Length: 127
Image (cartoon, rainbow, N blue to C red):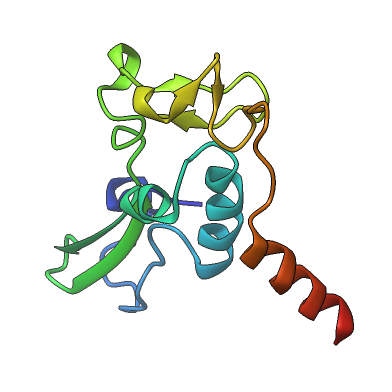
């Protein structure tokens, strides 16, 4: 997997002008996104990490490639204000935490599923 065009193997002078693949392949991108989804609170954070760049190789031929920008998430890098949930390991903003856990995992006394949620679950079981 090549992340940047300067990592690509170079053609020798007089060699045929076959383009060199650079950046993430479609398969690499799918695998990477699956991995990123385990640590990101939402899909926009996953998508923000995949960048598209247009450039020219040393022969002047245009190339376009996709790469993973590791500096996008978590915002602020090492000094991020985001907190990793101890239950799921996902980074979340501080306002999405209660009692030391993200809102997906925190338990509230007296709270339960809504009537609408129960109805939807019952309908799903009937199918």
